Length: 382
Image (cartoon, rainbow, N blue to C red):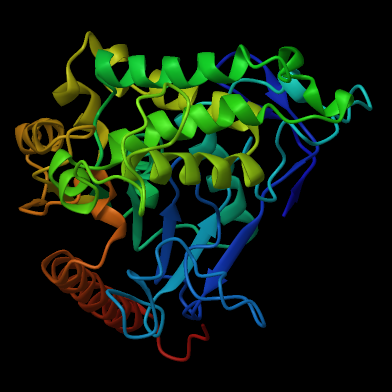
């Protein structure tokens, strides 16, 4: 969807002539009451479910969760996935041309925040004719967007599903992001963010950034169980500083190499900064309770015991602040060994929980539609 009108950003800058890539799944009801917005995390996109025709390996990033008969059932809900502004999967980002200069944005792409993404998503929903969401849902950074929706557009959200997320980043998390960013900006091929003009990609920096990030997504238990201290097959210790000897080294190098082939370096900088900046309580003297006072949605929050990057403690902060405001909150803390990545995996307890919650949303939608019909005057046409 193309947008010509300028979008004012939190930084004071604005952007115009931008587009947002999106996908929809399922059918929008006649009363437009069954729409569910899915917000993505750092390196995901609008492609949340299913596969593209003729592309067997194009599975959506949350395909375990979304689809016909799945917890977020597209036989009942109209699901929308939007690629965030500044990303590199179809929406306008640093690799696109700035209409004001005729040159590729590169490092000049404006800084964007979670709040900016939510405003852009609201414009897209306006374009689709959707005034109110049955639910907004996301994990990790996507969960921050879902939470922000309830604060920026409280009357447009009936339910918010916030998974493996937090009300802001800890200093440790910001530190990990900074190490990853420094790896990118100090790569000789970065060229101050204008590497497109030089026909190169700062792959070395991207590889390291991904390796650092990937370590934080996994739990210590999973890494030990999966790799332990195993050496690569057929290899003995070589007592060198250069060779890849341990399985975990090989795995991280593989993840880094793969990431550097498809992700944009400037996008990585932008999105990690958006993570760092998110802090709704900051405008309320640090009080999350006061920040969430405007929320009107019902909430489901989910955390995972071994997620040390977005620990259960952080989800419980949100739960407490919502309860302080008398909001309707359901919370589940799932004992799972997978670390932060657990929100993307096929855990039966987790999927059953979300399925039950969306059963509740569907039942409420049917009841609300029935009430609307009952209130219509005789002979009214929808």
